[in-house]
Image (cartoon, rainbow, N blue to C red; front, top):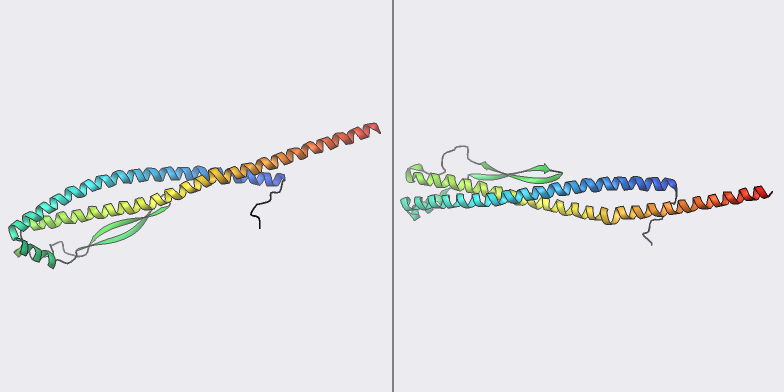
Length: 210
């Protein structure tokens, strides 16, 4: 069975094809605009990612330094005892937002415990451990931000690829096919018009001879 679409070489079909071409060209322009905007968003995310990576490194160095001081004051055994007794205090809440028609995730760090007090006995620890705990919470938040950026970038990159495929299909297949069909019908109608003019001239000549 042939997949070829038979065209009706009529003026109505020509009007419909010209309308389809205008719609396809408008869709192509919108797709290109969306693709370019998403690419700009990707570039912005890449810059932010690099910035947050540096932020994580700085915060992690600070947190590890404070943890090392806490271990020096408390001793490794006591510190490990405190750390292993601590229950999770943070969780991740996942939401979504719309970026130019693309659903992307939002990762939010939420506090599980109602109290702002440290989750360990203050009498058996040192103040520098509190600072270390706070620093690690900041590291955690920045790492989650990195994960969010990666997830958003992945979704946007997928949408960019879809937009590129659609742009290529419109530019290289859909619009050229419509243009060829328009040309074909125009040639047919022009030929038929010339034939009609030729027949009319013949009829006039015959009438003149009579």
